[in-house]
Amino acid sequence: MKHYTLLVVLLSAIVTISSLYITQPMQPLFMEEFGISVTQVTLFTSVVLLSLAVAPIIYGYLLEKFDTRIILFSALGSIGILQCLLCFAQNYTFFLSIRILEALVIPAALTATLTTLTRAGMQNMQKYVSIYVAATVFGGVLSRVGGGFITSISSWQFTFASLGIATLIVALLAYKLPHSSQMASAKITPKVVLELLQDKRYAFLYMGAFLVLFCFQGALNFMPFEIKALNPNITPAQIGFLYLGYIIGIITALLVGRIKRALGGDLRAIVFGFLVFGIAPLIMLAQNFWWLFFAVFVICIGMFIVHSVLSAFVNSISSEKKGITNGLYLAFYYTGGTFGTTLPSYLYNHFGWGVLCVALSGILFTSAGLFYILRGIFKGN
Image 1 (cartoon, helix red, strand yellow):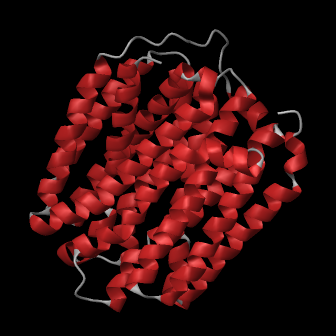
Image 2 (spheres, rainbow, N blue to C red):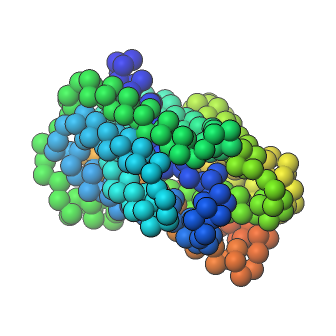
Image 3 (cartoon, helix red, strand yellow):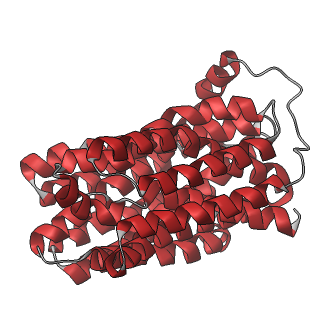
């Protein structure tokens, strides 16, 4: 893989993920500024995740037929313009409308980025996917920690404008990428998608992707509201600081190859990741700023072990149809994220933080058990 291509792929992942999560540390601020509820403000993230649950399949199809470079350039350019337009939002309706438009193009950028990477990194899939995941983690840190800090010292409008301009610069860099070298010769049809889903190996890995982001969003999306309830005077910068644990996710993603070898393979690493992740919501029961801060580190270790191994494992099963394979992976992954930003609100609003944490922990431990019990379906891979 050429160094320039790798650089553009990583920058694209960073700015796209930043655009996805930039609103999270500002959620309490938007509640006050627009006079909206918890459910309404979480829509700023969940509408994008909902689109990511569906659109990657469509974009995966397009990426098998058209130049990935043009799709990536167009998507990043649109995201950059829309981020700048958010600065002019004066009410909830306008802001949400722009986020819905962003939701249509963010999936294109992510699917094109991952497809470009997996096509170019065929000889060392885990290495390149781990680097990609590390870049997405950095984007999550940048948007949450950096976004919260910049908002506290300036304004949320300046934060969005800065990200929008940065995204436009990356779009220009993406335009100079080489043309796609691997276009599909076979026609991609809905039947091909169904065949992938009927394969128990793909279906099980996609289920794991769904569950891991469901729990990740369920824990971290409602954490700002819990810490705000504990300390009404907390600032966006302090809320963003809680997400600093994302940094360990970068290290984890880059070391996942060694973790797999130490544990004895992909499936054991996935089980281990789910178990570590499952411990974190129990730590969050302490309802203390510093315990929550520590819990985010534990969450990110477990989460990014699972995500890094799953995304590479899916690509290792077949060397063909990378656009569709990655599109489906992202679709299931972000479907889990969509439900993770909405369904847990019922538990949180009606039963409290404690019940939510215990429920998430139960899902994660159950997932670990299922991957251990059903590991036999992957024999031969």
